[in-house]
Every structure is written in C-alpha cells, then in structure tokens.
Image (cartoon, rainbow, N blue to C red; front, side, top):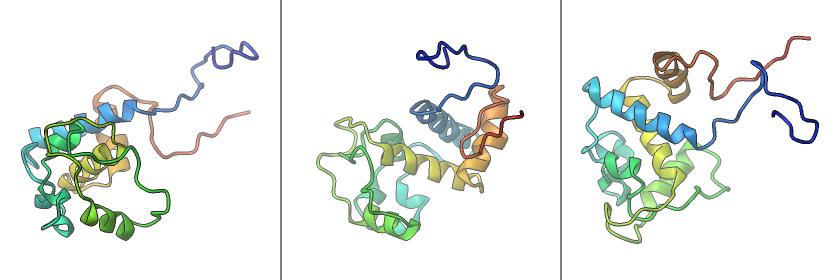
Length: 153
C-alpha cells in the first residue's frame, strides 16, 4: 500500500525513499571504482583527499569507511555544518574513539565519505555517477537521488 490510511495501492508512479539502501549502492560504487583500477579499498582516505593528510581520518582505509569500522565516527555529522569547507575541517579535527578496524558503528559520515572518494576517483560527481552509471548498470531505470518528481495530471 502506498498509504495505509487511505488504502491507496502502490503504482508504477509511487515514490519510495532510497534511505539506507543507498549505503549498499555506495559500497557497490566503490567496488566498481576498484574494478576500474581507480582506487583500492586498502587505500587510505588521504590518498584521495589531500586535505585530510596528517589527520586521523586521513589514515583510515576505504574498507574501514565502507564497513563502518573507521574508529567511531558518529551517526551523523553535526547539523551546523553547512559547507564543504566546514565538513573537511570537521574530518580534519575528528579523533577516533577506537582503533580503525576494531569496532563497528553505524555512521553515515563514513559511507558518505566513501561515496565522495569513489565518485572523485571516477572523475565524477556522486549523484551524476550513481544516476548515469551505476543505476542503469543495475537495471534501475526509475531510481534517482536528487531529482524532483513531477506528476502528470
């Protein structure tokens, strides 16, 4: 049902939020980038984001980002971060609460950083590479990330 309250059925035009399924797609994108020879999951973050060289986050492996074992990243980045520069400064100052690879925490910043690195390794924007490369390769013709859905009357 598209709506339990009105008992409206699901149709071919029903939208579903991608939600946490996006983590699986992000990991698939990173695996694709590795298969293309553009990165290795054993690479350190700083090999792909020079701004994080010398930081604790820069020493984390891409595999640790993807498996949520980066060392205790939080569930979300702080809400007051509103720019790319602020996000980079946040990652530059982040201090792990445990050794990378030893403890799993459900952390959206972890998989988000992996997605950014994977897309950049392919010389693409994350949304663009997901919508133009990954989703079509998976047969997902009506899947998108940041697009308004317009209904036809």
